Length: 184
Image 1 (tube, one colour):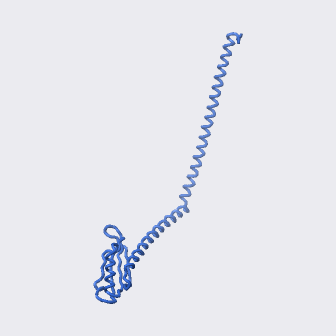
Image 2 (tube, rainbow, N blue to C red):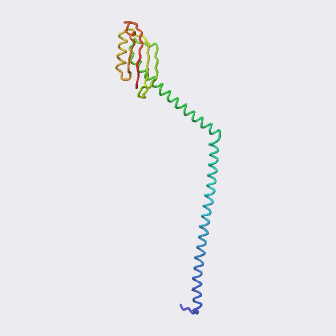
Image 3 (tube, rainbow, N blue to C red):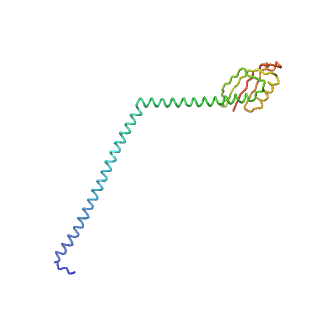
């Protein structure tokens, strides 16, 4: 292809082509910058609104937490927790008492009867708890009472088994009093 344009015109055309490319590049750069700025501004507005909403929610929650109803409800929950702990402790202790009574009664000979049982929970020097047990009762014979004493002494959970001396006076229908400790 033969270009018959004068040299000035050729340079002008080349200059205009380059200039149009530069203008297009600058226009694209400005457009991209405007879009990026718009996106940043939009994100900024979104985050500002989110922060305001979060602050409003936080303020509402703080008002709820500081309200009298919430404090009353919190106190009711704390009191219920204390009551539950007391109930759990009560049942744990009472189930343990039932175990003690069952163990003692399983060792009784047929002709030995209790008139009175007292059980006290005590704390020893080593901070471990045990039960101090006081029993008054009646045995048909001294032999039955002696058998009961031996059964208690052979059990590892029963300690310090002590029958009062008056328990051994009568040969038949003897009344006895007994003290012992029970440790689990």
